[in-house]
Length: 309
Length: 279
Image 1 (cartoon, one colour):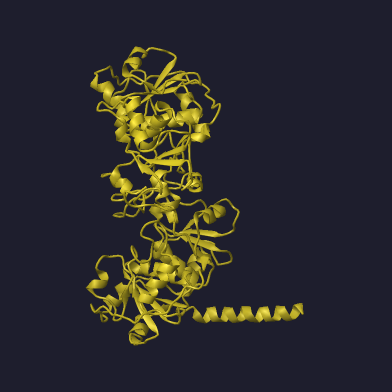
Image 2 (tube, rainbow over the protein chains, first blue to last red; image 1 turned 120 degrees about the horizontal axis):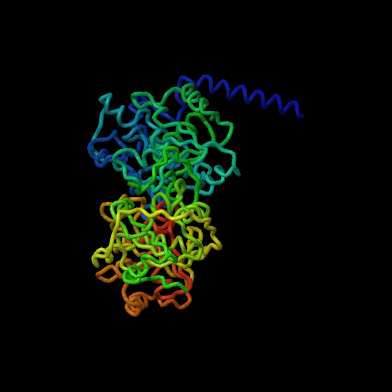
């Protein structure tokens, strides 16, 4: 009996390995190319969603048929700091004409940061087929592909939240358990090196939302920017795997990613989870929660002190 | 019990008293270098009264080291003063009380009143023989953390005072103009009432008389009838100022300062908050 199971197991492993080896040059189905999307603009099974951060980006022009989700008001709770509720998300998705079997394709400005946040929320709330446009809005525009200012109206969909994949989300106590050694997991800080080292509180031009600088103890620094090519498309799976492996992260244990407010980390969550298939949770509280929480340990190599002058 | 407040006149009369130690705690930590009260030492709220690394108050060990270096003994009467209506001096007062140094007073009116009265200042930095200061007890009931508050939200007998400006309380702004917006959300903790710290002070920067303060807080429903009271602001300093009023001027028994304040609460995932005028 045992031998038989072993044989099946070995077969499975070899199949998975083969799939990965083959897939290393091509992106998995969670990523679509601009060509694919162009061919599917009229596909009724596909719904395109723009999530951009620059004000007026969608209004200026968007991909034909795309609906607009505003990160600040649609995908998060507008009062308490939290993501949109399951009920709110269901209503939002239905209004966008999304059904349970719809293929959702997200794209946005700023290297798909907030589109990736959207993809995370869709996955968290159990959507079956969620994809990201490789290269996002920037590449689509750079290639001179068609844009429109027509705002589509879609028949109300039947999407329903039947499960919440809470494994995809990490909270402060979960991260504290990792730092204190109670849970085995890799922590990845995907911010820039200057933020990670505590030289600055936030990237230039962005509000400093934390009273402490530095990073979560034990986190390794792999900036999100290392996962993309110059044109904003994802690097090959082999390159991505090697990038993380060099920091000792190979998917053999759970991973938690974080940044400043959770948006850039969604991008890395997408890479690690959706492209590489690793077990990854996004800590959306990120540095603005951790760096302000009283009594939680931090590392601050640069020793920048808030308020000091 | 040591009087929580001493007058500028009292301090002027005791400048040469070896049993007291004067400590400046100003927002502008470098003010001291230019001039300060004769004999005063300087504590920096950013680098000395807080933990250098994680967000926390100074550790017990570092507090002991800081006081030892300033030549303070556990029996010494410590007088605190500072700029900006004693905000950070009050924060220092709260830390001294927390670490069980109860023989501590605030100089009422702070640096502003002292200077207005043209009392002596000096640039001379005093040197005191170091001591071996040891904390004898910790008054942990003077401090509240996020879990403490969460467990009491909406419970009978638990009251909160948000001492920030009405605009911050209502959620129209995240921080006072010119200060870093250290929260992702604007508003207040559900149930908190808004009594800005400034309502507790007179024109000259001193605290208002006790009967006026009683009326002010009493009319808002904070009569000190044994209820638990919590003070908070943005980063925990202005709320120390009101904590002094509640606990030491009005004599309410159970008053805690929430030093995490809005920069912690407003950034915590899933924490309930309220926008607008309603508590």
